Length: 310
Image 1 (cartoon, rainbow, N blue to C red):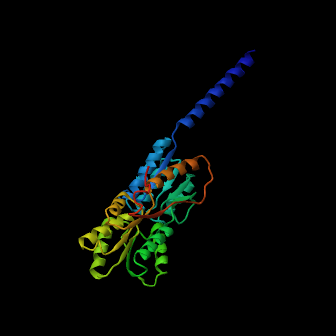
Image 2: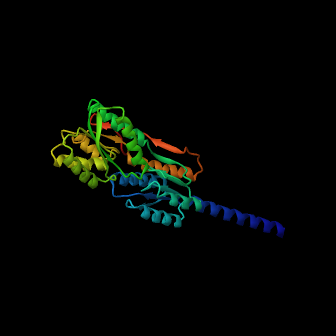
Image 3: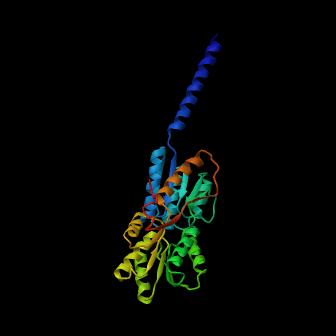
């Protein structure tokens, strides 16, 4: 009888321990590290807003870092996230090559890692979430070709050319331009996805080029900088301007007739999808190597119909 009682007591103890352990696992929130290339840009600020919205909804502990467009700072930020033993690591690289050691460090630490918006050029990355940047460049090129009847002098304002997004948007745009022999790219200069830099670059281009018919800026921040330069030169009504991303300021500029178009790559939805994907990875779900989100042309005709956030 004593032996039976001892067995029963031990069994109850094991059940209690197992129950307590299971409760602890369920009760502890999943920790997700989100390494952003910068938060000094409306697009990426809105990415984080979307990510926080989904994290709050799902009870995820989201840790966000800001590299301020500095690859060295991003490496340091990722090291800190790895030291905090996050369950999942999301990277939005400031440079597609420079981020590779950070990916490898996460791999060594057995922390699942994936990228959003901009890709890493090496390392084990579970998936990449983003928009088809080549398609966006093509949309921009086709829009200018249609608006200008296939002829005119064109300026291309490029992003950070060390990133996959800037390279692909430029590639898609130039592929389309090559189809129109009377569309002449008279200037193509980087402004690093920055509004202030784009304004300065555009001011210099205007001084040396009196005849410009169309401008493609590879993101809306740069498009808005270009817009400011065109307004100051009193050339806003002479030149067709298209950006990319569909941030709030650009959408308003289209409504006001100051900017002709952008390509919707809504950052809020990108942020939400990133956190949902982190949960899917944590739960062991198999994913495609690349998750491509929808992008589309935005003009004055459809600007109020395009959803850019919940």
